[in-house]
Length: 216
Image 1: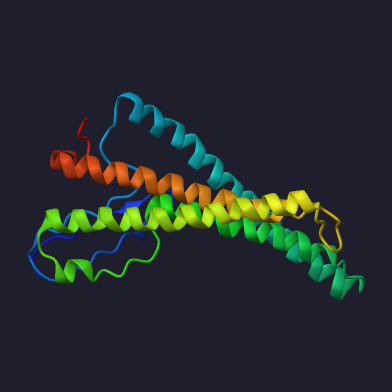
Image 2: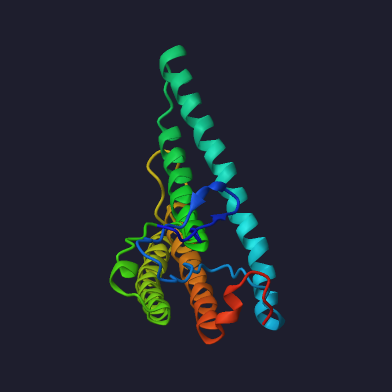
């Protein structure tokens, strides 16, 4: 294969994080677009993306803090159980709380960066760049519909727990603290799929935007 790869790393992971697209011949395969445009949007779209920068920073910070807290809890539990012989069962509930928030916030963050699993079979079957882009937009819409359905039921479940005033078994904390992570995760996923579709549509309408540094 003589064609140079168009795969590229995404922040904040850097060089170790890649979006994989199968490349088997000299066909000019379009880049896999994410929620974050590599061209510079202006106007309202630009304002939205600037606000998104703050949101993504908040999500990343929460993931970092919750990860440290979870590691600290596990270490404390080991000390309590094997050193002081006095385990605290409530730590397992708190650890689960941090765990679900890490999981679902991570789901939203991975959707933002487009780093979820890709099959890659599309580019093996379809060779026309415009068709590939159209199919990818369709897949984004289908993913958006699925995520919206899950978000709807997540909200219903959280509201059910609030209405019933359910409490955790040991800490007696409100159960909605756990179930609200579902809303944050699927809500973030819906948001980033919408932004991904907008980015895909803009590039589909104006292919010149695919070049880095382009202006709308």
